Length: 376
Image 1 (tube, one colour):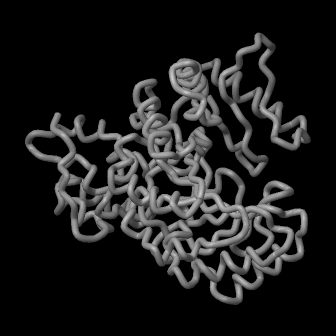
Image 2 (image 1 turned 120 degrees about the horizontal axis):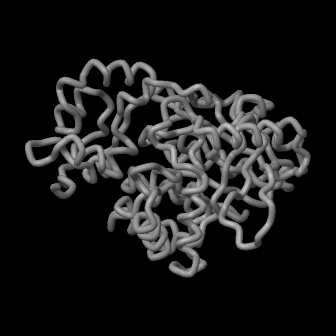
């Protein structure tokens, strides 16, 4: 198996033809790739493309399919198959959106999605049905409506900027959004979730970082799934953020073939801490269409964390969470250390209807019978 090619295209790869040209796909897969591109967007920026293994006489198909970076970003024909349990909106964002661009799931915090563009389109994304080159950019009127919603909901004290990727906004627009939110007295904390520092580190210019300036508590949460994503260029970009006294956390998704071994997960967590990034969440895969080939059983995830306890510092320990389908919210599903009868999952409010718990128990029984389902 050869190492990563290190070849870096001059611009973001967005078409099947571009992937084939750069040795990242075989010519005979063109028709499948074109069918995929009609349904799910492709974008691989130069920094990420440089990490990919090229398909050549030295690399067999199995070698390339084992590439933890390629698995995340290269289209795969398996995405054309939607499993029965997969949903276009797996965590129920749409039903919890009071106005365009806002999602309100928890009493004290809400999401603001100012755009639906990303620097890189991950093949496992739970918003893959919504993000893409069309942008979903909130215009001035839509943004004003969103700001008004926040102003009239005083129990909301935290705003999470997400999307899409907010760091794909122009510095001017991003600065305006952060200033406007900062001017709302009951908002105490701003959080921004982004893949840009890893996918497009050169975008973190001083001008863009100036746009993040606020007197409110401000946190940056990056998305990283494999240690090799934390290149020297990425670490330098993160240092520019940290030099602004902005704390950086990370979110990762547990993915088959990417980080589902003790060694790969340990390497990722250690690399994050070495980059002064606190691992925050390890997400169980959301059941988005065409993502079943990334699925890791819950018990395997729990076992991985159990094996890492005592092997890595507590600074590197993330909370393993499942976002209950339908909008009930995230629940921790990490390993237990007390001997107790296993209970069904309950949403954070503790007010889950009995039918929800019963549905989960039934799915666990199905798992015992060997049937496929989204949770185990």
